[in-house]
Image (cartoon, rainbow, N blue to C red):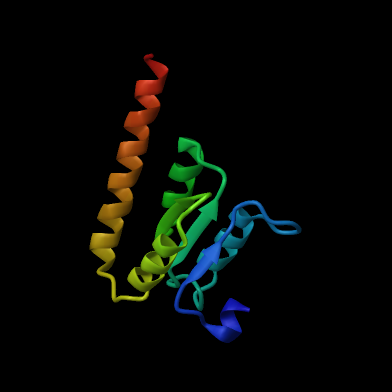
Length: 109
């Protein structure tokens, strides 16, 4: 559907029947016609490992459930704006670094 419709942004849940969100995200990123579509993950999975994995697959944002609908609208609008690839990569890298720090802190408690 993403190939034929070419959405401005894709909202994706990690826990779906038939094909889980990880497989769907991998398929989107592997297809040149959908690889650059911003993906916002909406999920109840909030572990640092899941978030690091998601940022590694070049998502646009990771929104844990439950979320405020207004926040969802704001991220949709933000995702549809032109994005500098270098700035987006730096943002993802910062998110991963912060999550790894949280993991280290948890291990040393």
